[in-house]
Image (cartoon, rainbow, N blue to C red):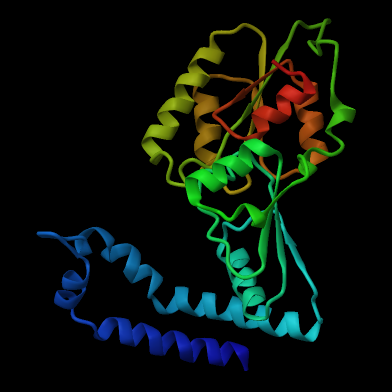
Length: 273
């Protein structure tokens, strides 16, 4: 029933979008003497496609039903970025159910969280509260400081002695990448050019053993493997792992390279250069 309703809603809204002439869309997106329609049309056509509307409707309606049938009193999330999460937040707001979003990374203040309903943020400290209020006008009453909950247990992995293999002299290097292409921070060509430069420099080091840890949302694993092979770099590529497995991986390597993410902070806590 929910699936059929979502399909019908998607078809109806999609057809309504298609029925609006492009000339009208150009007019509605007019800024001074220039229309922004040529720049936004591909994104808007995607958002109003049958497929995207259907998925959005389906998620939202399923969450509405689940919240009601399971008598959910509160929801706890570690992110509000994905369509899945945004739909459950919207469904909760409709039913006035509280949502708690726990900060899991250092970039929480980089994007407007667009809080709705009874949604509240749980952050690491005063720095992030201040940035969210100043940069995105978030109500400070919707933010609570509780410390970095996501780092609980990391203290077990903190080291005081180097882990270099004394018998072979192997230098173990861990590179942890970010989903920069997927998030639109860099295009594919720019990103892999930077990664190639790092690989080329590492290839000059004698007796190096490399581990490349990809972000769970990153693609292009085959391309990364091809780059390592072409440079005769010894190592492996990993992607999915638990937090404890990740901390152990940081601990086992002699040094850590990162392009800018929470993982860098985790490596510093563990005491890796």
